[in-house]
Every structure is written in structure tokens, then in C-alpha cells.
Image 1 (tube, rainbow, N blue to C red):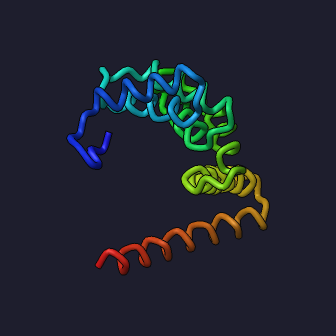
Image 2: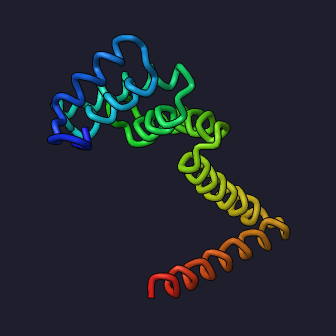
Length: 150
């Protein structure tokens, strides 16, 4: 697919991934799914990508679990299902897949803020403190990001 040692031929790469995927190879199932998701060497087809990711994810492939989670999160090739997406992200996260760990961290942070807000509206002092603390750390992170980008 990358043309290392020869000409780049995305269609050939997709055909070779298909041969290995037909044998049930999880890495090839994932790679062929990626080809379908972005339209490399094959026509773009989100449903085919999600199906291939699912087959690889069932074998424990962390990249496929993450990618299938993204499909469920955004409704790409499957019905949108945030709960299923989080299950898949957690599976990939438990295998040490950093992108899944990051998205899970973001999700837990958002969920925590929503719960703090609900409790704060009921007058819970600790929730009000935590909510304020979350807002302060968010503004500090924004300042750090601006310094980093400068």
C-alpha cells in the first residue's frame, strides 16, 4: 500500500489484504476495513469497513476495537450507539491502546462534569467545588495550549 521497494498500488494492497482477511487474519481484516473506510484501493464503504472492523475486534484487535468504536460513536456504517462505542473503547483501552485511553479519559471527564452540574444544582457543596475546580483547570489547560502553540 505504501509503495516501499516499488510503485504504490492501493488496489493491489486491498486485494492482498482481502486474501489474508479471507483467512481470518485480524490485522488484515482491520487494514482492509481501513481501506474501505477511507476509499483506498476500493470504493469507500462505511458499512463494509464497520463489518471488517467488527470481525477483527472480535479477535481482540485493539485498533479494530477503537475504529469500530469510532463507527458507533459517529454512526459510520452502523447505527449510532454511544454505549457500544464506549464498550469498544474500554476493550481497546484495557489492551493499552493509547487513542482509546485518551477518548475514554475525555468521556469520563465530560461525564463527571455533567454529574457535578446535576449535584451542584441540587445544592451539593462538594459538587459545586468540583465543578468550579473543573472549570479552573480547563481554563489553565487552554492557557497552556496557547503557550505551547506560540
